[in-house]
Image (tube, rainbow, N blue to C red; front, side):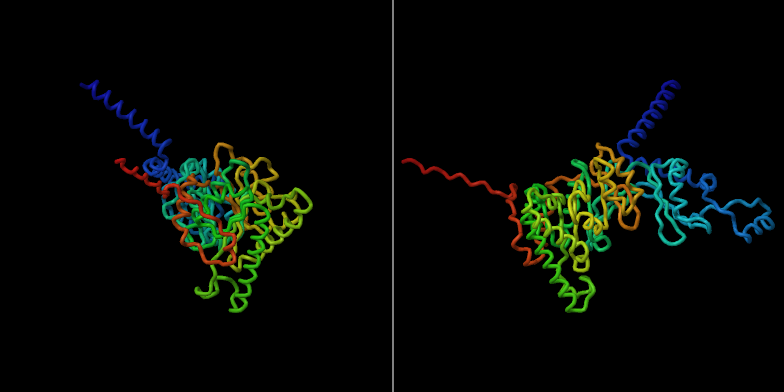
Length: 446
């Protein structure tokens, strides 16, 4: 009997260990909540002061504090680490708010983030400046980008579209009010189309006009015709559409001047025209020409895009430009247009020069990270903006049918813009709603 109970206890222990190991691989979020979070929290609490001292993140105390420690507490004066103000566990990691002492800056904590990661046994440590004198350590207990699961509260609202997941477990949001123009670069099969698919799915649920320019005969964007206000599928139509958008921009400026408003959002709601998001699928198709007679068309397109990139934010027209490369080799005006695109998202690229085209002028430190994106992780990218900050992101996998279904569901939200009506695409029939003809009965033969 004793041998049987011992065998059962050993079998139970082995099964439990196997279950924990299986959970760590197949259900990392559940493993983190049950095992990882308590262990990491305890490791952080017990080793915090020692870790900060070893990593050089301590300063000498003030004279008054040193005097009190020596003469009142009768103890040895020790360097002072950042003070822990708050510790909070999340579904993906641990958030720690630190109050920096005089002599330390957020860059010092960021420089030691890799050493802190190894010391506390977490997957990554990201340092975010919350306000002067305070930083937040966002620790992730596992690789959240291996299996993307967006936060439940991330929903499109007020021209803010969550399109991807950051490596710190938070949602990466495309905020058109803060970053009106953006550029997305990436090689074939890198995940650009998936990024655009997530973006269209979110924008379709908002009261905005979606304008598509897809010179690959519309193979990418025509399936979303139910929600598009305009679509150009060849360079000639694209040139005409850009001219109409520039005219619409000028009319909106006249409206602002008439009512003394500084931008679209200063107008009364009943006078405010709907925002417009222009989605360019492959920018190179608008720049490249096959003969000299196409040069005039290219100049019209490039000039119009540059004007919109410089001026259209105030009137609620936003650019979302995608491409494989975007450099000076495309022709005159390419570099000038790229400089106006504040937001940058770079997927896997074929060469370092392409990564530099997208990131070197806004976040040079992010270029090596973009060059190291593996081919077996489509959707993984580096996102940056003019503030110099950058992060790794990955878009969730959604099907084309899901995005098309959302576009059809919210087709009633297409705003009334008469200038775009000539470019309104024809909506293909939904094969699920086609009713087959009923067979007629043959008349009875007497």
